[in-house]
Structure formats: structure tokens, C-alpha cells
Length: 106
Image 1 (tube, helix red, strand yellow):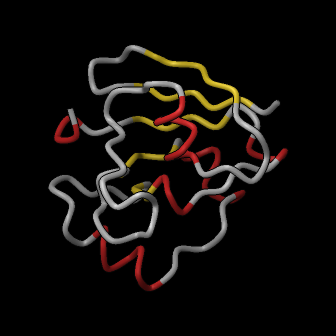
Image 2 (cartoon, one colour):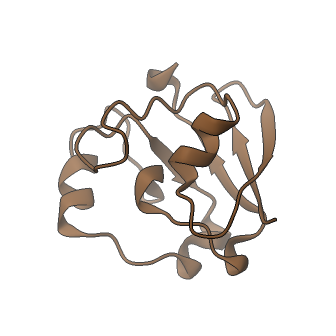
């Protein structure tokens, strides 16, 4: 199974395996990764699964929807690499993707 590396705001990393097709948000929740809340259950309506995708992986992601862009406008510390983890579905090409989690979601 492909792997995801989540890094919390203090630098601790969590390596999780997840099936192709599952969202990064659900992979984090299934594996007890702190810092991903997923309050809306993955419907792109709360931004509590905000993460910073490592720049090396951005070109492999699907483009952001208008809804995701709108939701990210409301996060406390947006960056160029900000994405909602509920909007990223695991693919074989994303094996090893690295996502750093913001402090505000602790």
C-alpha cells in the first residue's frame, strides 16, 4: 500500500499506509494522526484537515476546486502549499507524499 508521511507542527513524523482512492484526511483519521480533525467528514466545508503539502509533490496533485480555494482563504496561516487533505485522494504516484500539519489544528 502507498505511504503518507504526516509531520506535526513540532516536527514529529507519522508514517501511515493507505489504500489507493482514500483521502489523506481519512488516512490520518484511521491512523490516529493528531492535527487532522476532519469535522465535516470530508465534504470540503470546514478546513479542519488543512495541511502543507511538500513542494516536491504539488505537481502530482489534482488542481484545487473553487470550493477548496474558498475554504483555504479562511485558515489562520495559509501558504502556497496549503491544501485540504479531504480533497487529496491517494494514488500510486503519491506514494511517500509528505504533509506538514499546522499548529492551529492541535
